[in-house]
Image (cartoon, rainbow, N blue to C red; front, top):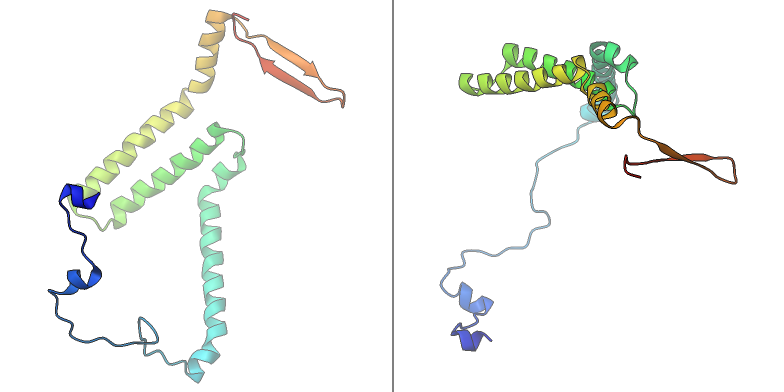
Length: 166
């Protein structure tokens, strides 16, 4: 197929023919580190682990204090309970970016304005209760949707949502 296209297949040796080899050597490891585990480092290792665990505990409790109000009203099955968590996160992000942002001023302003815009949209979703408003408009137009209730032999019940037509 390559001959019909006029392309000659090159081997690895032909490809490398134009290059000059300086040195080839075999090594045990790709990176060699000059790390020496001293007796002091061995003695201090458990204390370093304790310090790290304490710092993780402090961070965990700080996050819990920051989000305590939102976490008490959080339910896994409800998106409307997640949105207040996200609102709180964006508020903290904007506050920290204004105070400790490391970016250039125009990038910092862009990040803050984008986060503020997202925050405003989510606040409107939560405050104006879009979920229920939409449902009320649909029910006003079509009436309440009927459900088909199915009772199974083991006592469980299931509901199937019916469309207005059928």
